[in-house]
Length: 429
Image (cartoon, rainbow, N blue to C red):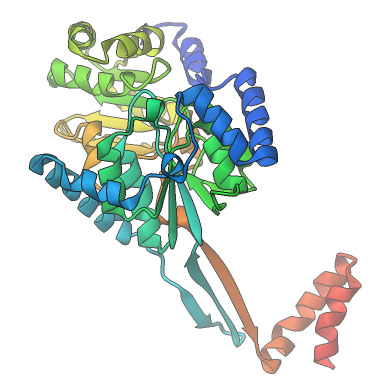
């Protein structure tokens, strides 16, 4: 775990190294994934069966082995303990309401030149949703991916999820039922992304692939972008907590560990203007790590990637936060909006002492599929728009063409494209 202070003479050099640390897949992962994609494209279902047996120790033989039936999803939902079922329903309801508000409006207008212009938004035909099943199974991720797709109007929703040893998390099945998923395939890893992109005899291809996964899944999405659309290339989880000394150290320690427990490569950073409070948080991280069932993973993450940054004043925090462009940013101060006003780069921001990042993971409403690895500088979290595309349209009357056509012809001639110019000039005769 690193300790930095803005008062140190070498702070800027150390902070620059922190910002530049990628914590992402190596060239070995890229080569392995490239081989897997080639095999799936060439051998289809046979390659999927081979990889599933090798990595998940599960044999894909009959149709029942390949797919999980809708009846099984309904049964899993019905079998949930009532309190858990209500929690899942509340999450789905809030996610649906938030994303329904993101639906874009079509445009259709006539400008001063008499040209009719506009755009229509339409959903993609089919979306593939990757749901992890390795370290943990995440029904929340299924809701966060499937519900925006449904709100967008996607007709065919396909889930791929690994089922190690044939085991599947019933909560994932229940979430699939609640979200209206059409197909669930027992395939994981880079090979699942390849199947969604290329299609096989069993699995029809989709137009967009979304959802989090390990380094191999992320690399597969990166290599397949262009064959299909993707939400983003996601790396290990991140949290940045900006906190003053008035906070409860146990609360902040738990917030930092909420991301550290995901993966040994996850990163948790705290910026505080109170060095004593920073030490208290560090102590509470040690205590809580020992009590977590995920403590071994969290410990590795905190020891290798955890950072405590002491600033002279919290007014320094936004500059540092913007450079880090973290996936999650918590602002635990009396007036979080004052700092939030200066934060330009973050996947999602959590305002106030009673807004833990974990609320955003499940029931707040905004999507928890967020840019990592400083990509919040140019990317946003998953939204309805990731499952839609915009088609512009133009309608030019004879009179309007006489108004704007000569300029189009002149520009075409200047670019050395006479056929472009002629297509306008012929209509102007």
